[in-house]
Image (cartoon, rainbow, N blue to C red):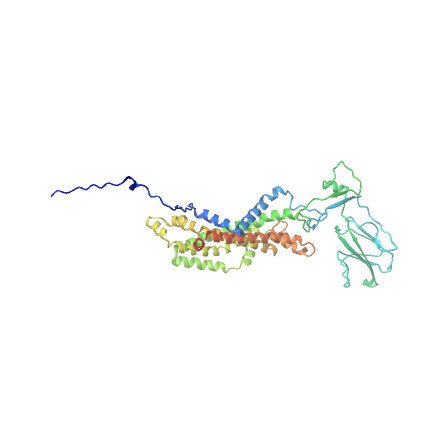
Length: 454
């Protein structure tokens, strides 16, 4: 039987391409690495980004600031002791000091205009038999009769004050004494504002007057500018804050780097080995946590022969590195215990990967996010620890500046000159807050579980 062949013919337009009525839009997203995605997420966090810029600004202030503000933090400006920011810096040229013999007066008054060179008082002889006691105070005298600092006792109706005079208002009281040397109710008080003056020799030594110039007396000049004022020894606060930041940030970065590194190595080893070794290593970490920090700080100071008044930076670093690594070790151990059960770790083992390769190539890189967050939280903790130890006199000792030691010095004059305490305390607060907020932002940006919730 013969087969029949059938031929079918199609029209030319039967094979025309299909034209869709609707446009097809392809949604594509560029491929991002883990760190690129983390950076984008960090940039979206406004608080963390502001904190990052604050940290960068602090680093510039610390390392580039002294190159711009070239003032020695140890140089004392005795004409501007405890000078507040924006205070009057004018000084008037006067003659060299000439001793004053004094003379009586029919009334209690200043013999001449009070200046920082001397304040001269004279009065009528209202108690010639037993003498007078002279007081000085910067505060007005109320009913409690707080006359202030006793300057001297005199039997003459005049007195010259040259004790640590500053350009401010003073209240002077001359008190008559009885036969037993006790104060009586017979006293007189006068108030006066002391003007800042300078002699020609001092003006030339400060560079206010050229060596060949001879200006007339009474000429006014402006003393050196201190943007943040001076401390109780006349040292520039801005320069001391810059150099103090070097000490505080050095301890804040170097100490956490060391003890976090020790914690990473210790915790990754314990987590990878597991079993009895893991339990023994973590029990030792628990023992280190129980050790008192201040006690070991004192022991390290004794071991390094650090005496009273000497800087305790080295003992402080030793104490931090020896005692503060267990927290990082616990955190990294938990991450390693989780990562070692992943499939790619088993695959690497089947391919013959050694322990060192598994830990260094796979496990620790996958814990870098946790390590970075740990460091950002460890830095403010170390800075605060340094400030606390310096504040109680166990850390950085004067004249080496640090923010903690500056707070310790400023608290003594906080009622009369609050800027000496406010500025270092403000820098400590801003630094600690910035690193904490940056740590929060990094934790959110580097946590893979946060991506799944969005």
